[in-house]
Length: 432
Image (cartoon, rainbow, N blue to C red):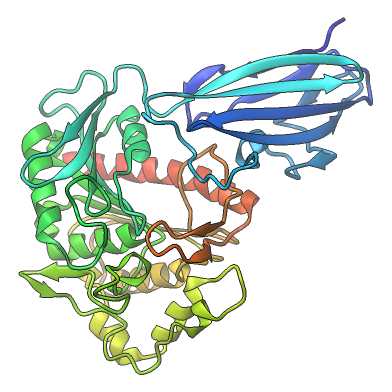
């Protein structure tokens, strides 16, 4: 009998786990499995070796590899343990993002070989994409199949200090039933290259445009952001509470920060990030008696930005001045963090937010999903989690986002499941 390899489902959304199974090997035989994916033109690869059972079978939902790029039972370990071949690329998705990712899987045992492939999609069939360049806004709107006025709740998606338009997350939100507006606020066509001096009114315009454009079901508009975007969504929820139905804060800050690594060099990393009514919003580095960049700048490579941030948090007066007034948010909040966040202490920040909301008896649900040994890059399921060390896309400084590949993969998977459940409950509560 020839070696066989099956993968089910063969074609599905990226957040769907696959069942990878090899049959017809010899009992006890070593089976080597390789997974190859082209991501924006760059080849990513992983490999693991397994021992076939008494029936000559290897099943990745059941079996841990004997050696290879990941350890332990992990049905999708061959995806999250992938690394780029001969490239420093961190680009996980194709351009355009609607172009699916195809992974070729090869199993070898003795002289025998079997091959199969599977397809991961960010955009489900019928999802539509539209560039948005109106009212001064720069973004992309993804709509679920059959979208019409009042048919879908909405979510506005904001990136972090890398800037740009977060189309992958918007496409997946739309595939899961949300009118999804990925709004850029710097490093996109017609916008500044830097985060410095960004007016909050721009995002209020975005929220109003989204409501007018899609007329969301139950008038529900959530905001979802990560890193600086996680800081930003808490700030927007507190500043424009009547316009924000729910807050999804990935690896957020609990205080307002300065421009940091995404600053305009002419303004400097201790200059303001956010403006309201034309005036800078106070940030934690201002008049801070304990803050120093030295642990980041001079610490051992790869540098941990979080170590500098922790020095700023030792000045309680500066923290109090810069604290985001999350008690003003009028809606449910979900916080997602990792205990080994190398960019800033998102676990500590999430606890600060949760504690304040508990103290004021926040009348809406508050959820906090904190991932042991997880890092700063919490995304969604079944993408590579190996590339922690990187040059910051604005400052060029070499940093680590922290975490381990296995723990980051767990955070990717569980956080997305948690966010979808949270949003579903928030929409139902709004309807009621």
